[in-house]
Image 1 (cartoon, rainbow, N blue to C red):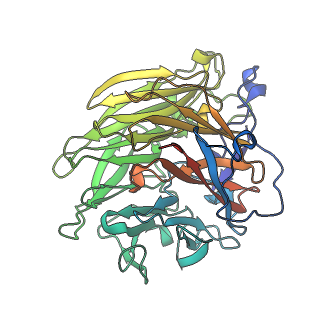
Image 2 (cartoon, rainbow, N blue to C red):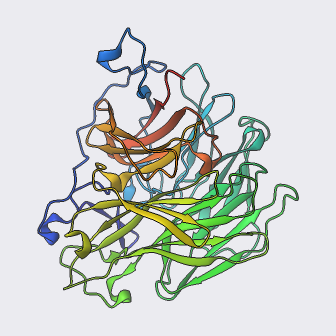
Image 3 (spheres, rainbow, N blue to C red):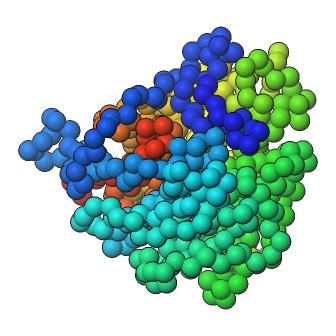
Length: 457
């Protein structure tokens, strides 16, 4: 498995390689790397399948594939453009404007400027704003009234950066978040927005303490403009790569999906040869019915146990909250229970109860999977393998029954790592298209794509 060293810690930056085949003694899923092209294609060009050009298109297809920048930060050793599955990198306004954020290239590892790009419904990409950032990419959100916000972490402490009006009206103003936040260049920070009223949520880890540990979270009330006092969630082990989820139906329920991230010795395990110093052995959900006056309760979703000093890896790729207030967690498992194959899972949690946990062995590169719904309520998984995007239509009940994929060629810009989507977690409303970005050319490029989900609708 490819790895990168982040400030003394080895971190995975890609998850659809054949993970530790030499260690496991078996072959896992597909390898995703391919050589990047040199030239960019024109914007506003529908990328229709050859068999349907000139005909009525009835199945999902790749509508846009565009180069946003050729100069993003390539230092994935320190949270560059290719890093951070939990980050919110793209949002869409009600008018159809697209906003994308990325860390600038050529900067110091600990103080990377962020750059916000804008694409109108008709036209190409242009820089909209930039500001001071930290080691990690910012989180970008869009709230009611198409108001944009970014969470950045310059000098190790969080800032909230807000626009001056609708649709990213300039200027963007940074404000240090009040309270005694945990200062760190490794916050693994997550964020979300409550879609109905615009309350903003932020969470960061206690990076340096592995066991016991803690993470910190708070929310900003739109009604008062004030931040709630910082809340501490004590944990037995360190959690990272936070995926927070606010209500999508006007409720006060709130949840955070996260993965453990500790040394093998913290778990009493022996580190397998040639493996990471850090192990991810479980995925948990932290939840409350009322974020205004209650703390979080921890619910274990899955834990893999080491046997005979074998390698293991459990990681939450994505999380989603549906209109029925259920939380969906897409996670992958590799270890003794899977014979060292990578197996994707889709867990559905209602309150404190896991109502479904379905293995998805037929989903190619499911350990890269993203989950979302269209405007009709149908669920989809989106993955990539090699130089193709795989769109997996699923059922409308809970998304756990997956059909045959629609395969879309993106060989013009082969993906490096994660797909980042504009979904309700970041404030983008449900629609019959999905917009996303991914890194290419070893993190140097950021590529935008749009998939038309219901072309005949």
